[in-house]
Image (cartoon, rainbow, N blue to C red; front, side, top):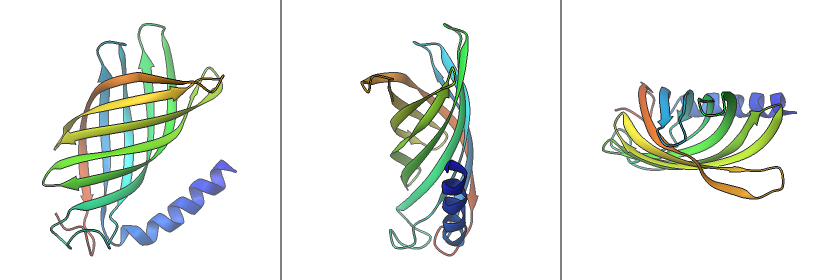
Amino acid sequence: MKLKGIALFFMTFASLLSQGGYISIAYEFDLKSKQKGYQVSIGAALPFIGESGNGPFVFPGIVFGQRYSSVNNKSYSYTDYQIVTMTQGIWFGGGYGSGKMDGKKHKRRKHFIGWLPGGYVNESTQTANSDWQKGTFKGYHFGLAFPLIGNHFQP
């Protein structure tokens, strides 16, 4: 079921990518909880928002990531759907997805803000008893985005 959803998302995404978008790889770390990890994301520009070539731009996208906590010596992977808005190098947005730790799925949500390669991420995780644990990751983001030039997104 999840594979079909991802396949459908990418088929829809392929037509959107003709408008332009980005592929990004990032390193994220939280000094307080001693978590660190990486993520790869891809986003497509929505052609009906902003001026072609000038912005602001809105990118719906998908993220795949891996985190490691040195405190409890555990790692987990996650997949999020997110919306990123960008104008003049400033980016912000939010996302919702799921993570897998110790063989159990956890829902996650996040919001973020940044400028060029650096930013801040705040995430919350839903526990097994349906309570949201706020601020399970409050960390820094350092990433490199590679533009996909298209009809609308022309940085």
